[in-house]
Length: 322
Ligand code: ADP
Ligand code: MG
Image 1 (cartoon, rainbow, N blue to C red):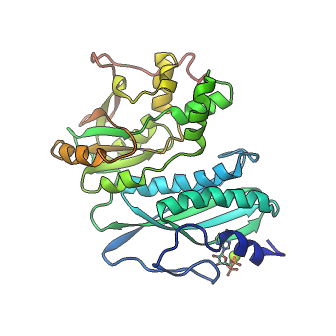
Image 2: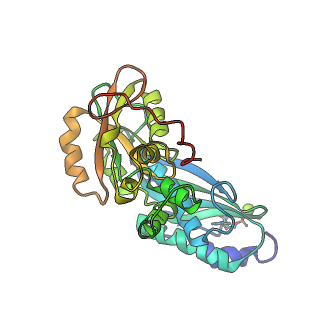
Image 3: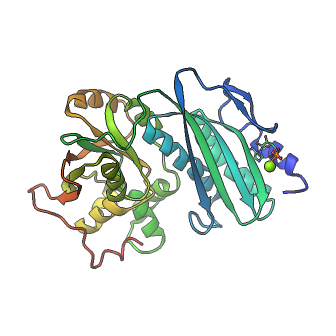
């Protein structure tokens, strides 16, 4: 972005996020120089958001900034990593200081709370899109992979999956959402809170973990696949909320199982670690709900509490979820 690129970077990206002593050189030189603590692995993840695909071009820029960083921190959380730094690749159709100011405010608020510093990036002109790469630390041997679930392990989920998708369906007029619920659901969609502290407290406790970005059934499916196991998920144990309870039961379960964008954690725990989990979860700011059990037979089986199989309704269902 010629003409004022230096000024733009200086104004918006110079000191964004938490100040950290392990940043030897941050924004402004050819590279950032960063100090990784001895004995720890560097956890790295990148996500790209494209206007029109992942957010609307006229979406509130503060929300876009928050969510772009949140979805990346969620990946660190799912690995049990402690967030440290991030870089930002930004493609802008034109310089717009008001948009950039709000975007950076949204990002900075979450960055400061999560203790991460923006240490570099790239700014170019083109269709609006952004990539964030996050970096975190995890001591060697305790990262939460997707592949550690074994038969007999219990399956848990944080928070209330399904509310973000219900918020989107409400905004698009595909689901009836009361005025009282609308702002809560919009917050769940636009300001997801990555479960960073929860993920770190699962080190040595969870046998496997994944974050729920594409729907609980699908993301749990990835975990089962990676672990070479299957599971029974008891749909009547799925976390509920006033907003989900206002829907017909099948629709509410559909949102909980297939709705994306929640950024909750789904994880498994061996029976002998359940006491450790209870102690850890007592300090969490979100719910922790047991929803099923790992079995040797491959695949995900959905059951009612009476043991009867439950199938995602197909007719009338795609009406609710795009
Ligand atoms: P170079 O041409 O050497 O790649 P740039 O002019 O692209 O350097 O960037 C100058 C400095 O500003 C670098 O330290 C780079 O990391 C930083 N920077 C550029 N764009 C961003 C951005 N969107 N967010 C954070 N830092 C950025
Ligand atoms: Mg450059």
